[in-house]
Structure formats: structure tokens, C-alpha cells
Length: 368
Ligand SMILES: NC(=O)C1=CN([C@@H]2O[C@H](COP(=O)(O)OP(=O)(O)OC[C@H]3O[C@@H](n4cnc5c(N)ncnc54)[C@H](OP(=O)(O)O)[C@@H]3O)[C@@H](O)[C@H]2O)C=CC1
Ligand SMILES: N[C@@H](CC=O)C(=O)O
Image (cartoon, rainbow, N blue to C red):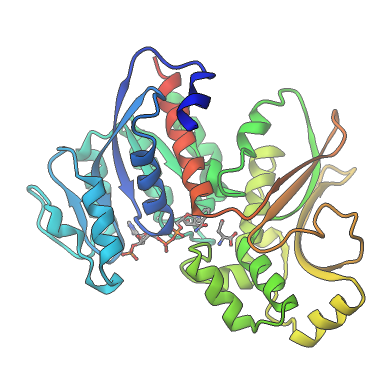
């Protein structure tokens, strides 16, 4: 079916080889690697070759730029307990094996690797964007594309990284940073001349899983476990629960779509931890439900007011009311279009993987 559909699209004549260095091999990194394998014979015009994988505490593998057997690496992860995995077993070339590759060594590895694309999917740092920011900067300085699923570098380095990328004729792309693989940033690139006056949305899936599950009578803790098992919670789920993930996404949208580079701490923020089962049930009994709403709007003064707020939605007409589990939605208000709403229903890490995959293709295929 996929093959047939692909024939309807323009198939690039030449196949480009793309050497990939993958930083971070958790839920997102693995889903992305799997997608590259699944789509290898799809005729999209790029042959992805993994030459290095770096983790935080599970070692790294790099064999002097030689292709890695990604299917074998994925199958090791699938068949082992997390604490048993050590990627160094696949070989580290001239590099000494180390379960933890420190940031300075990772930067050296990026520079040495000669990769075409560095894909970065390491945990978010709300305060500084590091070490992801430095990884992406190094990749771009070395003339590689920097593709990232991480919101931190968007907020802490969007303008610098984009300018650096442009100066090298490369791309810094991050479609997965907000709403997984849903084309939010690329949609905006396709609305030239439009001004964003504001937006409203449900942008954190983990809290939405928890809120929906609590409506069904599950405990907060059990619901969080479900989100973790689905691979959508942050490495530190407090970032989801306390509203930091939602706030960094709001800041990312303001920075890129409004061209107003706000900090995460500029976003008025609340989380969901104070909400009780009784409050959720009482709301449900009145046909209402709680959502962690994200919003920003440009005031007449030009100032941007942004917030993450736990709201009790009262109207089934709201595009955010009927949004179960990990689903997310964003409504944008521009000076040229009636409100536009994008909804993602029950996304998984495959959606995020596609955001990265699409960015890699965009970067590779537009390059002459
Ligand atoms: N999960 C999701 O649904 C989505 C996630 N994102 C973003 O994608 C990124 C990755 O998320 P996810 O895969 O879920 O997170 P995980 O915690 O599952 O994976 C993170 C990976 O990064 C590795 N890592 C940690 N520190 C370093 C470092 N210094 N250098 C190299 N690797 C490092 C970890 O190593 P180790 O395995 O050894 O711990 C792990 O492999 C985050 O920024 C997240 O916000 C974006 C959209 C959706
Ligand atoms: N932890 C995040 C993952 C995607 O950004 C969420 O729950 O939305």
C-alpha cells in the first residue's frame, strides 16, 4: 500500500548517501532508527547509513566512520534489560570504550565523524538547552546538518543555530520539538507574510494521558506509568507534570512563529500535580474536563503574554475538549486566515520519529 502511494509522489532520480551520527538512543532515537530501516526501500531518494550512536550511560559505538548494523543494535535493545545494554560491544574503533562518553568527547566525536547529519535526541534541559545546544552547534560548525527533537536548543539557540546553519549552507531543523511529527514549523514556513497573533493548544501528551486516565478512575501514579510505558514521558517526568515541557513548547512557538524569543521562565506556568481525583470526577459529573492549556497572544503593546494553565473546559464544542490520551492540538490565530486547528489523535513515538525523518530528508534533498 505504502509503495503504491509513494508512486504518486515525485521520486528523486538520484539516491544520495547520508552518513548519520545519532546522539541519544532512547524512545525517540530508537523509533527514528527503526523508521529509517522500515523506509529503506521506499524510494525517497536518500540512503541513510548510521556511522555512530551515542547514549548517556549505555556506551557508544563508532567504528571510524564505517557503517553500523542498525538492525543488530535495535535487536540488542529489544532483547536485553536496559541495564545490560552496552553499545561499546559493537566496537568503538580507535576510541577507548566508555560506558559514559562525556560532553567534550562527544563534541570531538562529532568533529571527527565526517557525518552528513547529526541527529540529536537527548533529554531536554529547560534552563540552558545543554548539552544538546553544544552538540548542534558543533555539528553545524563542522558543516553537517543538525536535526533535533529537542525543545531546549530551540528556545536557547534558535537564532544562533539558524544563522550558523545558513552560513554553512546547512539546515537546523526541529519539527519534532512541538507536537511530535505534526508539521507545525514547516506549516509556518509555508505561510509567508502571515503574522501570528496568538495560539492556544494542548501540547503536552503525558499530562493529557494522566488527565484522561483519571477521568476513567485510574490513579495519577498508574496513569503516569502508562505514559512512561508508551515512551512519551520525559526522562524526568516532573518536567511534564509540573508544566515545564508545556512551557518550553510555548516558548519555542513564540520564538520561531512569532519571532519573539521568550524564555521558559517568561511563561506563566502551572502543572497538574495539585489536581485531585475528586476534582476530576466532580468536573466529569458536570460534563466538564480538565486540560493543561498552553497559550500565547500578542498584546496591542506588542508584548507577548504566554501561559500554561490547568483549565476546566466546559464546552464540548471546544476543539480541545474531545482530545483523549496522548492526543494534542494547536489552534493558531493569524492576521490573514480564520483560526486554523491541527489535531494529532493518539500519536506515538513513531510520529516523533517521522518528524526527524522528514527533517533529514528535507535537509538532504534540498542540498545540491
Ligand atoms: N518521547 C517523546 O514522545 C518525545 C520526545 N521528544 C524529545 O526528544 C528527546 C529524547 O526523548 P526520549 O527519547 O523520549 O528520551 P529518553 O530518555 O528515552 O532517551 C534519551 C537518550 O539520550 C541519551 N543521553 C542522555 N544524555 C546524553 C548525552 N549527554 N549524550 C548522548 N546521549 C545522551 C540517553 O542515554 P541512556 O539511554 O544511556 O540513558 C538516551 O539514550 C527529548 O529532548 C524529548 O523532549 C520530542 C518529542 C516527543
Ligand atoms: N514529554 C512530551 C513528549 C513530547 O514532546 C509530552 O508528553 O508531550
